[in-house]
Length: 152
Length: 152
Image: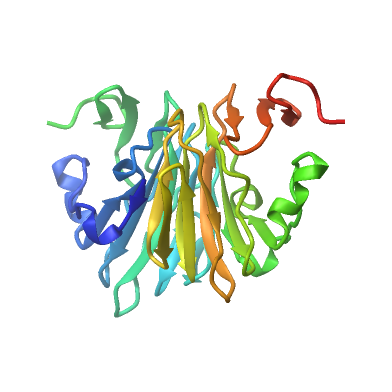
C-alpha cells in the first residue's frame, strides 16, 4: 500500500502521565507504518519544532529503535553527552543497551526524521532522568513510578 | 550508536540462486540497522541504478516490509500494475498479503530509498513470476523450486 505522508493523520501529545506531557510539546508524529497496515514494527515520520524533544531520555529492554534524519540538524543526547546528526545520518539503539537516549532540536528551524521500532513483547522502558517506568501491555504502555506506584 | 552511511559497507549481489542474480544487477545496499547492532529488524539504505530492480517480485508470509523514498522517482510494481513513488513517499507491504511487489528504477538517474523488514521466524517468500520459493532458516534464506527441489 502506497502512503503519501500528506494524507496521514498528524498526532501531537503523548501517552505519558500528565506531569511529563510538556516534555514533548512541539513534537508531531505521523504513523506511516500503521497507515500501511503493518503490525510487526512501527515507522513514524516525526517533526520537532525548535527546542522540542523526541521523548524523555529512555532505553528499551526488548525493542530495537532506529532513526534516520531527513531534514535539519538534530542533537542526540545519551549518557555520554551530545552529538549532532545531520540529514542523511542515522542512529540505532539496540534493545537492552542501558544507555538512555533522546533527540533535541537545538536549532532554530524544524527538523524531521523517521523513527522505527519493533513491537517485541514484554518490553520495559527505563527513564534514567525521571521517576518513571513503562511496561508494554496488550492495552498499550502502562506507566508507573519506579517503585511500581501508579501515576494518578 | 550513530551511523554515518558513508562509513557503512556497500554490498552488491544477492543470495538468490545464480540464474536469478542478474535480476538485481545495479542494486547496492548498505545495512544501516545491522551496523548499529540491531537484531529485531533490518534497515537498509538501497540505491538502484537506472533500469535496476529492488528484488524479484515477491511477498512475505510473516514479515512486514516498508520503504521510504529518499531520492528520485521509483516505480512500484504489484499485481495491480505500476505506480510511481517520488521522494518523501512511502509504501508498506503487510505480512501475508499475497500481492507480489518490487521496485524498478525506470528513470535515467539513480534512486535511493530506505527499506525496513522485521525478522519474524518461519517466514516464507513467494515469487509469483518465478519458479522460486525462499524459507527462512537459522543459516539464512534457503531457496528452492516451487516443488521443493533445490537449485543446484
